[in-house]
Amino acid sequence: MSETTSIAIERATPRDAGEIAALYLASRAEALPYLRRCHSDAEVRDWIGTVMLATGETWVAREAGRILGFMTVNGEELDQLYLLPGHFRRGLGSLLLDKARERSPARLCLFTFQRNQAARAFYERHGFRIVDLNDGARNEEGEPDILYEWRPFV
Image (cartoon, rainbow, N blue to C red):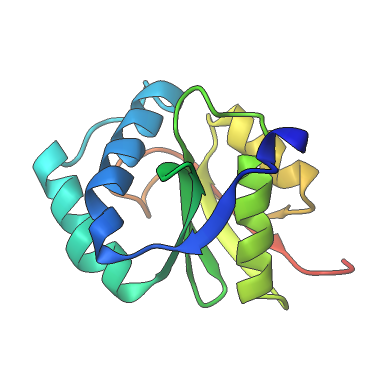
């Protein structure tokens, strides 16, 4: 975790929308190259600025003013967790996940794609358990996914 000592976890503001959108697009392109694109870059930027930041709690991992990762939690649902390419496996995801657990200490659930082995390993390492598998009918990408759940002391 020594690489994370200069990282601040801060609540995102509307000013962060453009940087978060760029990070989201870059991270998905790097980590999920097989994933069908359902929306244009402009639609993603609009969704982040007008929906995601307005309806959930979005937190960023910031170093020297630059956003290196973000997560959004809506009640008990961890809705998003993305890191800037080149910053994977450095403890940033764990810091963001710690913040999500702080915001929802009794339970967290999330969806990830079945083919996303790195995310699956990350969440399972952090105590998440598989609750349900789906054929992709419940997401717009049509990609088979997994519902994970975390509860303390389970």
